[in-house]
Amino acid sequence: MIKLLDVKTIAAHQLELTFSDHTQGVFDGARYLADRQGPLLEALRDTAYFSRCFVDAGALCWPNGLELSAARLYELSHAVKAAA
Image 1 (tube, rainbow, N blue to C red):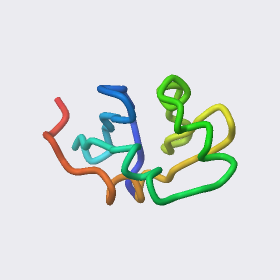
Image 2 (image 1 turned 180 degrees about the vertical axis):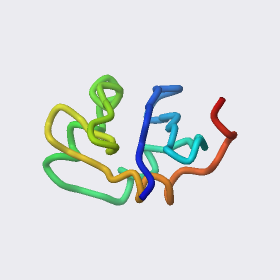
Image 3 (image 1 turned 45 degrees about the horizontal axis):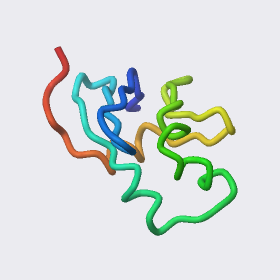
Image 4 (image 1 turned 90 degrees about the vertical axis):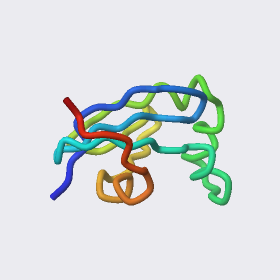
């Protein structure tokens, strides 16, 4: 099962993700949020809050309790390079 190991903000609503298979991908949060609604997602529209993300138990999380699974993020992000 794929897990998220690390996350780094690289631009507004853009995250560089490092996965347990030693690949990296870029998650476009603006694109993800464009067609989704909900009380937990609203806070993420603010770029400062979006950047407060962290990795917990292999998932991408925010302080409001929202979690995105590593498997879904792996599908949504495009590979940019193998992690060193």
